[in-house]
Image (cartoon, rainbow, N blue to C red; front, side, top):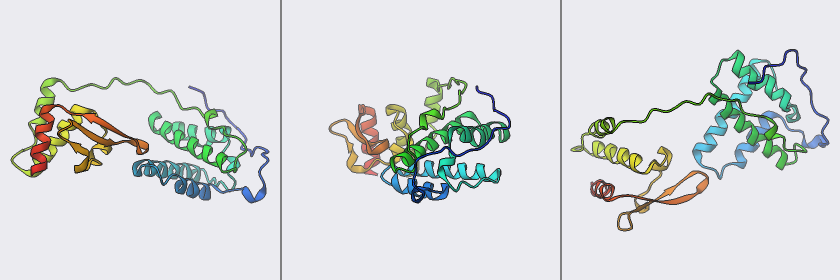
Length: 218
């Protein structure tokens, strides 16, 4: 992992941008969030939260960005990335998520001619330790599925959701977005609305079909 440079000097690159195209960070964030309104609500909310964090972290250092050309790679590394890592002690995965959102902002500013080049890839993510996620054993899965009381509607609903997640591996956001018309019992599949408005058919087995039929009747 790269070490934080000491006594670095903030600077604005000499960029060929007309004065009328100079944009503050606050306005840049607002324009970017308007631009991504076609994305999934969850993605929009994530970008909003991460860019709020950018303003907040800079504000902790009494920095107000009046010109987005100040968001250079050296500036972002020193005042944003390393500050979160060393001064705030945030987790690497949290920081990397914020870096990816800032990259998207830089790409947007370049597309809209507020920056003459796209240097988003010059801002690297931090290396994170790989963590092996422990899976459930068959016994643990069985115990989990026995928890909902299927004699009640909420219990049947919870059991159906748990079983569907287990069988298909779809995301929770995809699960809650399923409509009745998306469930195709006869064809043995479900139309799932994924990230970026992408749709796909996910097959289901006979046991899952029976549970879904029972839930839909209720």
